[in-house]
Image (cartoon, rainbow, N blue to C red; front, side):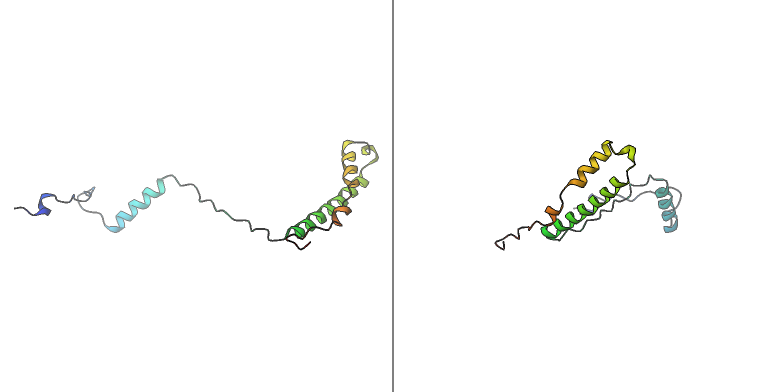
Length: 118
């Protein structure tokens, strides 16, 4: 009766390239040389998450209306600074439409508080 290990011997490891096995330093040098000639992998993309806007809807509304009022004032200054030759241009017409908007009605609106708190 034979032993089980003798019937199916495990395969031997990799044969040395030269007449002797490489030392750890030689093996490491060969690995580094192989890595330096290999194509570089694509850089890892770093994803940054935008923080959630935790303001309430009325707060966001007031901020948006305030920004619109600031922009309207800037457009009004632009309209007054236009030269006489551009007073009838499409740019001047667009600026007049923006300046004529009634944003005070938006700013004075009482917003619903919701959930029975009206």
